[in-house]
Image 1 (spheres, rainbow, N blue to C red):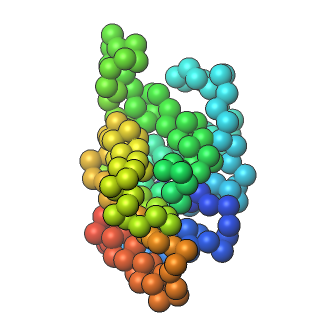
Image 2 (tube, one colour):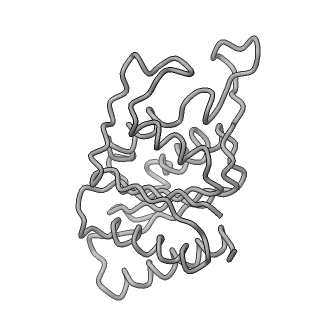
Length: 198
């Protein structure tokens, strides 16, 4: 399988970066092809400009590459921290610029954008790894786990990916080496379930 792996964290020594490295290796070990984008390392521009709005609009080469990688992926893995119940701005910008009409989704004939779009992505499974410093129980009870809703329902649910897996790792700021290693092992095991060996 061709798996798209996208990381959004500014620090190369972060646990998010370690999750991406381990995810990439786990997927390669399973026999998959991995297309990896580290948005910060690439200097990804998250700003969506008016000229890009229309379906079929000409896109900057970097955005066109990301669109092609997304629309040809058999699976997708996303890694980013939970910041204020949201992805980092660079990840939100990636969604805005890369999940394009006519490529990730389309509205049916006669629908001018008010209805439910038809998903176009071929990805059979999606895995989202998040990190946070809020205990899971409080994240769910106090905040309703907004990242689950965003990725499962508002992004991939609308773009046609049938299987969705997500894991929030935390509390990261209180974790030690042994705990982080256990989390990395858990991430690898989840990837093996979502994307069985080729």
